[in-house]
Amino acid sequence: MPAATARPGRSTLFLIGLAALLGTLVGAVGAAFFVANVVVDGAEIGSDIADELQAAVRDGVIEGNDEVLERTMEEFGGVFEGMPGMPGMPGEDVDEFPPVPPEALGPDPVLDEYAQQCFEGELQACDDLLYESPPMSDYEEYASTCGGRVKPYTVFACTELE
Image (cartoon, rainbow, N blue to C red; front, top):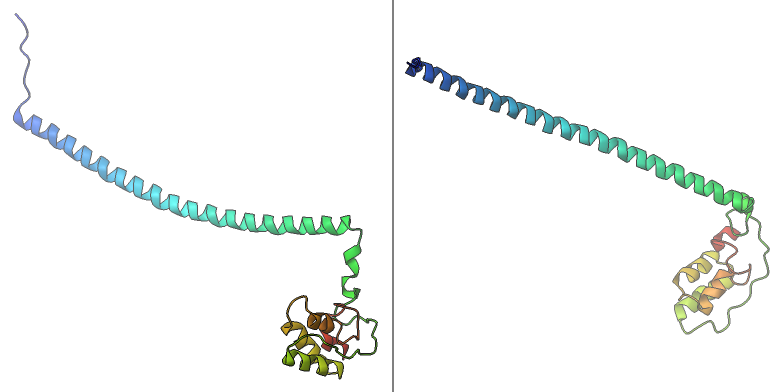
């Protein structure tokens, strides 16, 4: 005769079900805390990494530019070493000549007046003429010589000649 198996009672089944439900609930809460911590910590870690990466890229770009500039200066054999002494740099002596009267530079009476004042020694008028004249015009050419006083474009501003 087969052995009789005992069936669990209702209270036992209730306790097992309750334990399973509590286990599931505790697991869900634990999983929620775990995910929240991983996401929050992950965002903070990602932000920290982004900040460090940004600083590293910035420093790398600066160092790279410095290296390229240094290499370029070396390749040109010191051509740029004397830049402050190049013609046209502020404070540099340039060859000056007597002014040349403006002749038929163009049809603009305002620019003609600037050119006449430039010739008469008002060096700010030479600079104004340069900035207001059309590109590649006779006005611009005349202004670039400060009224014939210097070679074209040897000074940044004619007022430097004062």
